[in-house]
Length: 295
Image (cartoon, rainbow, N blue to C red):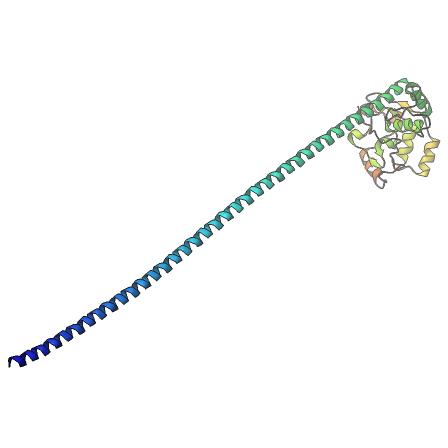
């Protein structure tokens, strides 16, 4: 009985031992599976960490690259700004230089014009003063030829407008020049009121030095219009004699004594239809360098 129990117990013990071994195997297997799972999890975690690290590194690289590109763009922008500033500075400098040059040229031009005007005024004053000198030497009545001879006697053969001597071989007509200036200084002549067809005004009108009553009557009869063939014929037939006017003749002019003079309305009407800028249009001149006016 005892031996049977022992066998049974032994069997039970074997079964228990077998069960224990199986449980141990299961535990070992579970452990192994746990290790495998842990290993796989660790492997996945490591891989994920590596991938994350790579991604972070890549992102950092992209950020660094972007930063370098932005820095490069900033340098390029800075260089462009500097280049534009230099270009603008050069443009400004050149513009200032051009402006200064233009101002200098304008000043030089103004100085030349001023010098020319001063010279012109001096020529004008000298021309008038010479005519005044001859006027003071003339008798109460005189002819154009007598006046021209006296002028040449006092000043020689010179251009009456410029005062320059007439050289041998020059084609300049001294008598015509003196005669033209005489007419310009006489309110009896259309040349006194018109220059190349244009009505004079203000300082363009010369002083009243001389009068020719016959000439004034003829011009007045033709209403101070452009000389026609009939008018020129009448002027030749009625040349009359010239006389000197007193210094204050503008204020004390006696039309009965010296001949009629045109009023403003007559001059305006006479200026209609005149050919501007041409000889024979009421303003014949032998020299156009001097505009004679009152001094």
